[in-house]
Image (cartoon, rainbow, N blue to C red; front, side, top):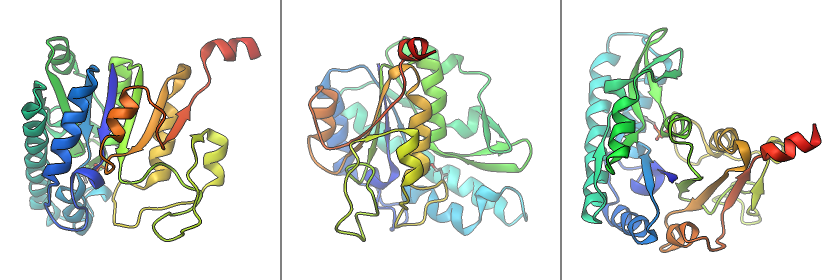
Amino acid sequence: MILIKLGGSVITDKSQYRTFRKDVMARLASEIAQSGQSVIVTHGAGSFGHIVAKKFYINQGLIDFNQVPAIAHVQYDVRDLSQMVVNQLRAANIPAVSVAPGSCFVMDDGKLIATDTEAIRALAHMGIMPVLFGDVLMDRAKGFGICSGDQLMELLCDIFKPDAIVFVSDIDGLYTDDPKTNPDAKLIPEVTKKTLEEIRTGSTVDDVTGGVVNKMEAMLRMCEGGREVALVNGNVPGRLLALLSGEDVPCTMARGERYDNQRQEG
Ligand code: IP8
């Protein structure tokens, strides 16, 4: 099974409030369907989440009660986006259902507490793809906070122990510098904990849950046991399908140590 996160920067226009990139989502859904792989999709919030969340500093937790209507506002918008995502998956003949993390999980000081995952497991067992997404969650310590799609990927990784993980983004992978501002920036094909420490890059648009480096850190945590975790460009038609089909494509691959290597070294 392969876990895929569709980044908000691919499925929405992050600079325009509530702009769904329907054609891109339809193409990605069809690439997933054509691959024939068993897949679970999670998605980011893009301009359905980050713009209002930033305006009302929702990731800082409860500061004043003017934030409260904004919580409901963001939750409404990201649920709307998720229905649009699911619509395109279903149009590609993938039985999928949106599962709102803010309605079934809480956080504790920013840490996701997902005690009851039975429904998610049962859906997948039944052949229905549970589609989770970046959302506003209630937080035991801070009142509320933001749970990113990347945090949910780590949860799903624990639940489903996937064979591989793919992060679909709007760039070819991790670069030595920001490729949007530095034409000499070079794509890094493989990243380890060590190479990541040497890299400094950032997102060019406002993002309340961090940029590429944060994503890479999450990816490195998930490649335990030798699992491959890829960051690939979803804006290039056919690239996701090629990756899922085992072809060599431009991307950044995070590779962890295999347990057997670790044992040999130890
Ligand atoms: O787009 C953020 O999720 P992400 C969720 O995966 C909100 O970082 C509500 C901004």
